[in-house]
View 1: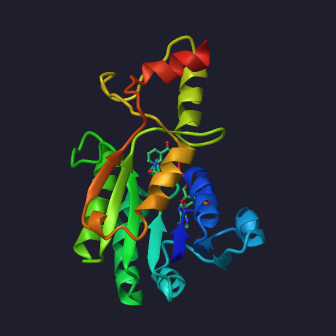
View 2: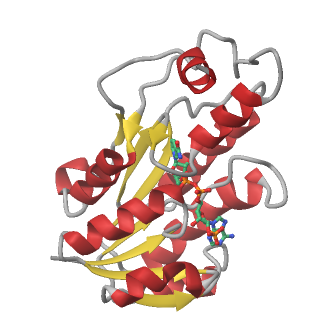
Length: 224
Ligand SMILES: NC(=O)c1ccc[n+]([C@@H]2O[C@H](COP(=O)([O-])OP(=O)(O)OC[C@H]3O[C@@H](n4cnc5c(N)ncnc54)[C@H](OP(=O)(O)O)[C@@H]3O)[C@@H](O)[C@H]2O)c1
């Protein structure tokens, strides 16, 4: 079992990953802005450090003595925190801090569709973040997901707002975009199973569930 630092543990996916790490017997350390959001992990034996995942000194300190760092920190909106600060500068700073702390690997979660395309600022920021992380030279694996499904929060909230907004449903992107939804439980297991996998270092892996769907499907299901 490994000593693991998890960043982004208080978010939608983080809540699944943190408990999976603890279930698997890993020694979990989390860096959080609000310790109350990490109370359940603390009760289960995790070490809770308070700090900002965008603060290099806080991340460097948090990474001391751990073998692996998992980062789920990202923003889907450019405000109040910017894509540049969180999705681009964040992974670079993470790579530098993790490397300086001597960790064995960084597992960074990104999105399927991350690419350099001025039409899609969010996807461009995620692609740039992946590049920035790789440039630091830290050993790592990038896991990309599309839509992650869980009971509360996550991208499904976005579809729910979209579906209930008005008489028409506005489909994001070109309308031709396909999703491969995965349950949060399964996405969390994939992330935990990547820990210690030397054969996956240096790879970008795209992960999804068994069905390929149009974004129309979740919207119309929510409506019906
Ligand atoms: N949800 C999906 O359907 C989906 C699909 C594909 C990929 N992903 C990827 O999975 C990852 C996690 O997504 P999510 O849905 O769990 O997002 P989320 O619910 O918005 O959680 C984001 C996490 O990042 C943290 N964070 C943001 N800015 C921070 C900062 N400055 N300092 C410290 N922590 C900060 C948040 O902490 P606070 O609680 O303090 O705000 C939270 O723990 C992201 O990389 C996302 O792109 C998600």
